[in-house]
Every structure is written in C-alpha cells, then in structure tokens.
Length: 276
Image 1 (cartoon, helix red, strand yellow):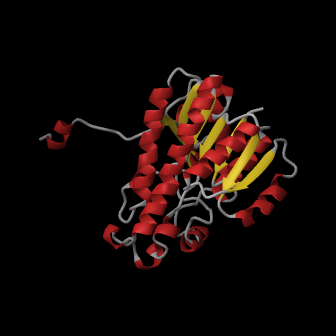
Image 2 (cartoon, helix red, strand yellow):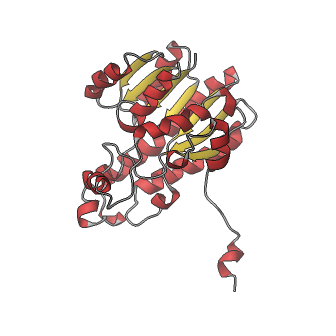
Image 3 (spheres, one colour):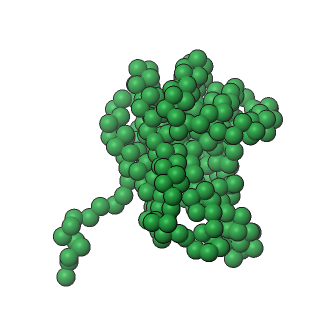
C-alpha cells in the first residue's frame, strides 16, 4: 500500500484527491493549514478503503515541511507527493472580479511573498526532501498542480501566474533529472477554473447561470491523478494532464495518450520572432 502526501489536502481540489486516493486503497497524509477543516474530511473519508491521517501545518515554514515528511516516513512512505497547496486570486486580489485586476506594483510584499512561498517554495521543499526517499526505494510519484498556461501570463496574473509558471518549469526539470530512476514527476490540473473555495463567488455564480465557462468539479481531478500514480504509468514522466479534457469513457492509458502533453512551455527559435 503506497503512502501519499497531499498538500492543501483538507478542502477543495486537495480534499477530492485525498478521497480518491483513499478509494484507491492508499494511505494518505492530508496536510493543510486550517485545523477546522479536518473533521469534515474525516467524516467524508470514514467509509473509504485507505487509511487517513491529517496534519494542520503551515508548510511555508521549512521545519513543517520536514515534519510532514517525517510523518509520512512513520507510515512507511512517502511514495506519492501531491503538491496541491496554493493561494489563488481570491487571496492575491480579492476584488479583481469586481473592480478589475490590480497591477503588479499595487501588490504588497506580504501578498507576493506568501503566494510564492505557498505555490512554489512548499512544493520545492517537499520535493527535495521526498525525492531521495523515493529514489532509495526505486519508485515514487511527484504530482504537481499548476494551472492553465494562459492563466500564468494573463493580465493581473502576478503573483499567482508566475508562481505556477515556476512550478511548471520545475516539473519539467525534475522529470529530466529523475528519468530512468523509477520516480516520476508529472502535472495534474483542472484545465479551467475549478469550483472550489479558491474561486471567487462571482465566478461561481456566473458559471451557474451559464454566462461564464463551466467550472471543473474537484472530483474530476481523481481519474488522471490515479493514473499517473499507478504502476501503469511507470513510463509517464514529465507530462501534464488536464481534468477537463480527460476521457472517462476510455481506459486510463488511452485517455492519457489522447489528452496528455509535455510539461513546460513551447519554445521557438529567436529567429522565428523576426520572420518576414
């Protein structure tokens, strides 16, 4: 039975992935910073096959990242690391959907630092601590949650977009450095706005009326996640899978072949920018 750490695992996308991993028979260590979220997750997990442990930790502190890894080791892992914790636009710019996005120079140091720490540095610190343990076993899975590429550089995306862009590129590098080791690094994303507490209520209301695109339900993350952490995906390394394009009517490997794309960005020679 594999042991999984899921950050941001007490609510939203993380909670759905925790429950999906439990249904798959995994042991799961769900980590979040709001202790009041734990009882609801425990109730929802009561009838699932896997074992659940919850930790309320602020992972922006390196010593708490070390504590999470140590807790997973006591369970026999970590075998799977799902870097899902994130601060979204509702934190970085809570009025963006009402008044329009703030410019990057209007943001406070605290907002920028907390977002970068949560969205990138937590994943970096956990990844650097988990990878050697996985490599020693000869098998492991690192799964990062980034965002749509078009969200990373859209107007008003700072600091959320750049923080996710950093994690996107880190995934590509990690995958290259882990190649052939039995440990993989991949991305699982909603592929569009997600119906979670991190989405502004205005957008959730507009989506419900059909005036805005459909929001992805958190449970849609489970199918691609379970594929990339499975033995069937041993050769899948350095890819991204978006839940809103995943084909549930197909076998997981077939859906992965159709919907997966390489992690990272598309680069073109500089000369292409000046083509006549």
